[in-house]
Length: 552
Image (cartoon, rainbow, N blue to C red; front, side, top):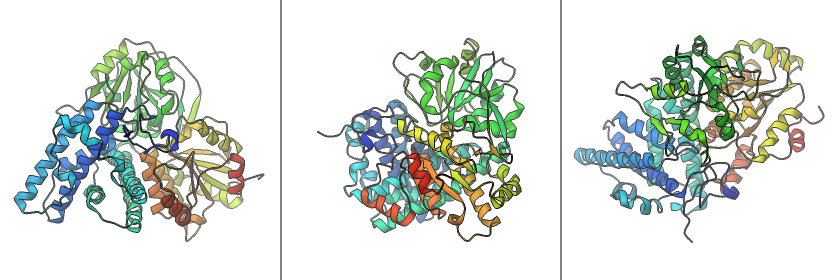
């Protein structure tokens, strides 16, 4: 029987191989096929844009924005709304044909590829989508390498969009993304050449994360050590999730003096670390945990929820809070109001605000505080204390436990691992993986917390900056000589670009879990193991032994 869909881009993919009937994430087969077709159209746009640039023909910046948004909208748990994906398809085909017309007018020759030649109407979308997905590449190893690169580009697009929304952009990144997408449609590269391109994708990923770091810190200041309240107040609230700090800023501005408090959820927790947001007295705290606990935590929050990016967990059919869900940017969910930009480029959150005024305050689910804000600038301010602690032996090893959280029971490993670490170790983290251990009473070492939370997943860049600085301070020739172990959890494509970024920096012996990606063919996995030291996780005891931390 022909597969209804084929998707293996996230860690939770069915049976560790692929989702073929419905996504474990909740995405239905039709949505998955439309996303395959959208990527097909994006490849076509990229082929023409790449050829135009090769012939010194300028490409409209709207093309860059479209490609970034389209890639972002296909990330796991971002968009479940068929209509919004179909609208992107309509716009994308129109954009592709306009670019083709420019090429003809300028005498630019184009390759004869299906991505440029297919001219189907809406009624043909579903049928065509079934032929252009992941399985279009028959060679298992080439398919694996191409998808590794494409998933890296999706993560890169997510970070780039956030930077663009803050007025920071880099044309060279767009050029690379579109050239690489064009290669996946037209390139006749060897496995070695695709591997090199994957590493180049990681290199540009570092460039992109540095751009976003600059955008965030220019707008909001450098993150600083901060205690974040995890209890509740007694006024109605709005819960904001995701990664987009610009959306948070606009929401905070529009809720000034309204009697409404703003709470973060999941990946938005690190917003509390930025100085610019501390001027808002109604920025109340963080509510709940990682994204996958939405169903219970959104119900008890009582107020409206704004998704600025992934991750959306589809609510159960009888979930009352669905009527309080709003989406924006690349996100979408059927039946939920989508907040777009107005003609002035800003968003109007008045509907969310008015709804909040009619809601009960959040129900408290925990109380206390958690500490974070250890991005590179803050850690480098503590550099003397850190270096002294390492030299004295007070800190024996740093454990990078960045990445994603997820629903899989096996992720309890990360909590047990953190609890079992010797007291002379420090965890460096970023991303929602932190929720597995950031509320544990792990204490400190000479005033340095044993969990140093740098922020969101893109703030893994901060962890790289910290490692490079320590390498310089200790006079080492190689990053891998540092007393750092990498035990990283992954879930979706933003984690893929972080992994490729680390590989491009020369980091080796990365332990990846809770499972290795299904999109890695046995041969590609072998290359990563042999050349870069990538490996999976074992039991907590086995891995403590492997890292030289057992019975310390």
